Length: 328
Image (cartoon, rainbow, N blue to C red; front, side):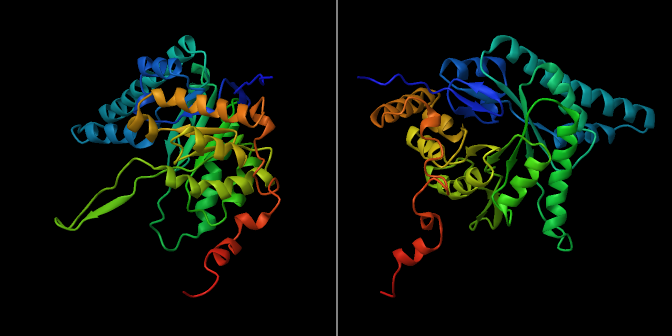
């Protein structure tokens, strides 16, 4: 007797037809691209981020050519509004023409006037907001606690400004990711995304220069998230977790769900394997569920979380000692 299978799931209080969420990238920057992602089976989309720097940077560039303060003020207001208007129109059109959830994304580095953008995104129809925060520690006198408080201040202000769910896309380098996730929840954040794959530089030794590293992730990077998600989903079950970076296949998605993720964000695999990979990933999840007689994702989600697994040593450094028991 075959099992009736559904891939439907909840994420940030939103109903998704499957847990495959296309993360913020150029593939989510226009309505035709968004429609194509939906047609290929995406469960939700995170729109390409709006950046503080893009607005302020464009304004600053033109201000250099103006000797009049009044003109400078005009340019600042016009460019900010014009840039945002285009983005808000995308949100409105996407909501009108897509049936899957549309999540807006703000890439920011500090609390500021852009918090108003969140309100306007909500008004335009966004189902949720994802905060993509990155503060590069350049000041050696600034403590890690100060940096974390700056993150939380942003979360606090945005959550207070909107009524739709807010999630935070975190970097991997926090000293205690469980603590920061807990404080995000205390500030009424609905979810976290683990992890943000920030720009990483490389070195060209021939030209002795700094260059960009490969922007694409690999499946091997998924293991950076599995243990932390297993721990976080156990200790903060009220916080929705999405796994990002390293999810390239249906098998990767199943791994993330087993440790407690509510959804998986995909990006690099779409560029390397094409949009058809969305369907192949959902097909894999469904066939895997059928083999293991699971009818819905909640039947197995979190089975291998920190509390779900029979042996919690699987997540601890004792595994390293088992693998290298003695000198060879």
